[in-house]
Length: 317
Image (cartoon, rainbow, N blue to C red; front, side, top):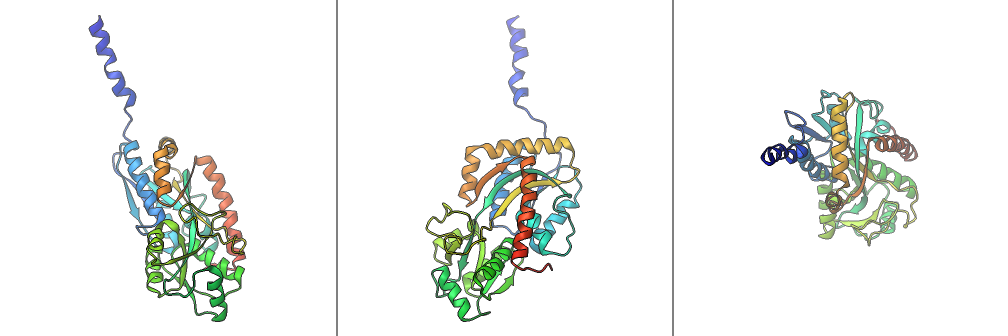
């Protein structure tokens, strides 16, 4: 009798911890920017965690260009079977609807929210040979020689921040657009462009190595990554609380079982202290949420970015 009971009990731990494989083929996590930035680094961290949790390989698919619109369109038009996900940011999901007259996707209707991941602090950096060490010195130079200084942009956040600064400080600085932040940063380091607003994670090494100068951050308060760098608000420029965010979406009409599985796995992953520590180590501020809160947040961000773009007097392309 004891032998029979033992045989019946033996499989229970195995089945109790087993989970069905999520999909028979790899899952694509589409990233709207080039490798190396905050969005890409966070996506690769989550891809590794999701691969384990889902029992299915999750691969990062970088599709830069058009301020993230290329990637957003690819996800929106993909087969909604749960094997394509979007490592979205505020650029394609909140800013682009007001930066472009038309888009090949709808930021709300074409996507199903899964989870918000983090907030992305931004910093204003200047070229190393530029003879300024403080924001007021930079603005004084810009006023002395209107149109001579330039700022690089590789994402909508940088564009809106640059135009907002020009308006708030009444300065004339030339915009130089790039497909993504990494090549823009390269030209700032070389001195071909004077400055740029970019996420801290993609530039912290260059700041610490004195290859660029950090002048101000755009968060409501100073960030632990650069505690000595003041906020734009501290320096007298109001309305400059402009930062990025990252979140995971699936195409609309993704089957409910897949959405439920993704939502639950992301909830567990983002609740882990070790994952939050890794996210923070990337220079991001963990801000996990479920799909309902992300949906509410997304709608509020659309309203916020509409005002930011309007206040910066940016005309849609």
